[in-house]
Image 1 (tube, rainbow, N blue to C red):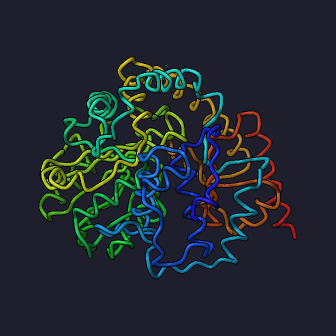
Image 2: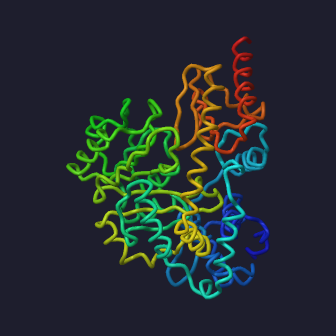
Image 3: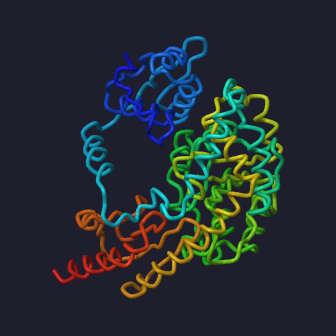
Length: 447
């Protein structure tokens, strides 16, 4: 039985639906579950594991969104056909790299423990758990109204997002929301995107058969001339970071792109990753604020709250909202109802705004430490403020040597472009870690 190999720990801080999702995903990739094999119904598995049906639904929905499962009407859930995995390579990478503890972790897979308030967040979650009447119903498929209303006010205050609660969709992550969006847009589109910006978005576009073209940038951001050549149906963009300079896109360039997109019927998807966490430069309004009818806006709370709280939101233009609402009940909500309601109260009580102020001060200090240390040893440096990393541009590939020295860069590092994220590593380790990187490179060059 499938429940025999699903191991969950109810004392673990990781949400149960994520634990179940990972267990089933691993079983599929390892070949323990075969293609076209039927898996237990939501009710059956919830009984076997003694968890709620909502928990199982959330896990199944994520697996469906990522292409591991298929939901056959009137029949149930099946393992998708044609899934091929290199089991040896998978075991090698998962068992060794993911479980390894690095002395200098610049991967950005977490946040600094000094910049969290878990005790306070726990109180908000506990408050919802004590209200039994809230737990006896399924989550709203579009996301809890209370949270969508809170986000509508919050996003306008922090980023200038123009939206009503009815235009907002809640999901467990940016990738999950993009799947819903692409389902509405249809297949075989042309998507323009900057290189090495958001690989998860690229994967969704590939899954939908989109042709991906890479847009060119100058010091002000993606160029309109490159868009004229590419002729995309969709432009996926992060206006907070320019791959050439590391700076945010200028207002002038935003308006130029919006004007072009309207004329050429191109939908803009604005990934405003950590846009409200800008701590070094002046806050500028998001692109959606200039053209709500032509921009789909995506925001997330994972980095500014807790990575384990998987709550993201998508703001649709009215035209796409009209297409979504008639079919919204065909999508299961992938985010915990408890966490949604807790976050709504957390926002309404002003706690998130207070937390943001604290985070900005803290990450500003860490960025200054990182910048000072890097400038001692390296000349070619790019800074991505909202994603909290510096990129070092080198002449050779040192990824293997870095890992051997217990130094873990970001997964989007390309070898010659090493990305070092400071969100998780403690301040005391930054100086020593950067010196280790320099010494490693210097010694290799002398060989």
